[in-house]
Image (cartoon, rainbow, N blue to C red; front, side, top):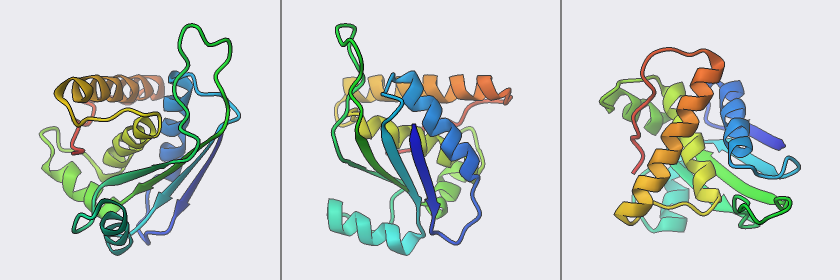
Length: 165
């Protein structure tokens, strides 16, 4: 799995944890090990520009996903998952800091960025949360991945509650 993490935000973030949880999420979703992913960490001004340009919404957001090859998790019938370019995930630590502090299970910016990384991966794989049933499926899968990664890493305490919109 080729995953690049590029921090352009000026904020110190745990890049290794972002890399690790992205790798864990992709492995758990059975994405081809030769697939590629890019994670970019930007400041609020850059995220605002992307949010306005691509979503026509004001202000910064927490995470945006830009799929490339529209890869999907393999089905039981697939002999081998296809490889390709997953796309880009863009994270904003300033928004993550605020969301982590406001969450019911208050947590750190880095924990929120880990959650947002998984959220971005799932969006790249075609998951969405516009409808209640889609939201239940996506957020359930997101929690299972974060919990599994945290257990594998020996991290204790409650997992971050979903704060993404």
